[in-house]
Length: 188
Image (cartoon, one colour):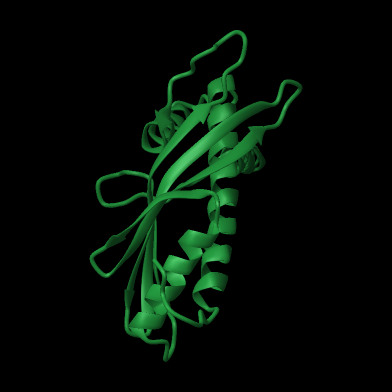
């Protein structure tokens, strides 16, 4: 009997681990919206130099649009593309807002207002955009219902994983740009 209980517990635990492997966690703000936020220590770098670097970063990356100054920083909209794997790869456009606020020796980034839009196909010439928060909420509900093997859950998982990769790359690029001194005048 003791062996049977241990065996059943092991089986239950294995199923739980497999379900968690399909999990793709996106960070959420206080209101439950999908967003990334962090503060980076920039050492002895002045607030003016950090502002130059932030402006230079947005200005020189062609994937950013609608760049504008905000109180203590800069914000812009970035658009990325990614494909979901499979026989019939589906292309998505992902747009989101990136804000960088600067202070003496540090800066804060916030990535928010993320929206996905599937590129048109013959079968669906005008797909509707979906906010990341809505997609992620639906994905979490499917996972909670044990429907992690459904097509919708698998697609949502792939979108979430692609998003994590995109944002990881963006953060690496941003940190490199914010660590690189910008000479000359600020021609923002």
